[in-house]
Amino acid sequence: MPSKKNLQKKLYRSLQEKRLSTAIHLAGARYTPKLNVEVSIASVFDGLGRTAKFYGELKSPANEIIKNLRSVKDEEVSKIAPKEFEKAKSHSLKVANLLLKIPHSGVAKIDFKIIYSTSNKAKEAIYKCVHLLRENEEKERKQKEQESQTKKPKAGERITYSEDEKFRNEKHHLYKIGSVLNSLMEFSKSSTALAANNPHVLLNGIAGSGKTHFLCDLSKHRIEHGLPTFVFLGEEFNNSKPERIS
Image (cartoon, rainbow, N blue to C red; front, top):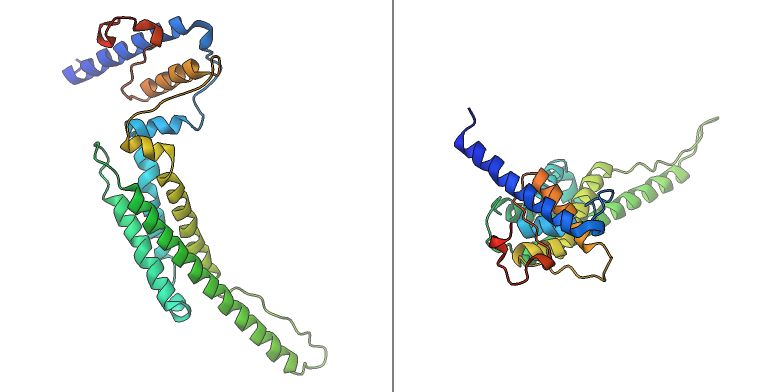
C-alpha cells in the first residue's frame, strides 16, 4: 500500500501536470512540442530554483581543484617557483573550501564576489607558476643543446636534441586547475548566479519569439524531474488570484 508521503507526491505532481496541460491548451499555436528546453537561458531557472543541477555545477570545481593539486609533485615545482606555487595552492584550496561550505539547499546569499576574487588570485598564481616552469624547461633545453654542440660525436654517431618537457605532468594539472577556475569565475558572473541570490527573472522578447513555448517546455521538463512547478499564462489572471485559477 502506498505511503501517505508517496500519495501526497503523486497528488502534487498531478496538480502540476493539470496546470501545465491547461497552460499548453491556452497557449495553442504558441506551444510547439517539437522544440525543446535545451537552451542557455534554462540554466538561469536552475539558479532561480537552486536545483541539484545548479549546486552540482557550482560545487563540482572543488573536487577538480583538489584532485589536480594532488597530482602535482610539490617538491619539484617548489624548487622552481616556491612563492608562486605556494600562492597557487593556498588560493586554490581556499576556493575549494568556499565551495564545499555552501549548503546543498536554502536561500541564504552565496558570496559569489569572494568566490570570483579568490578564484582570480588563484588563477593568476597558477599561470605565473606554469610560466616559470616553461622558462626552466627552455633554459635546460638550450643548455643541453650547447653541451651537445661542443661535444665531438663518435664516428657514425648522430647528435639529437632532447625537447622533453620536464614538467609536462605538473603543467597539465596546473592548466586543468586554471581552466576550472576560469569557468568558475564565468559562472560567478553569470545570470544563473545572479538569479540564485536575487530570485526574480524577467523574460523579455517580441511577440512570437518563443517565450510562452519556452516557459511551458521548461515547466514540463521540471515536472518530469520532480521539481515543483506551476505555470500560469497572463491572460488567465484578469481579476482572479492565481491560487483560485483551476
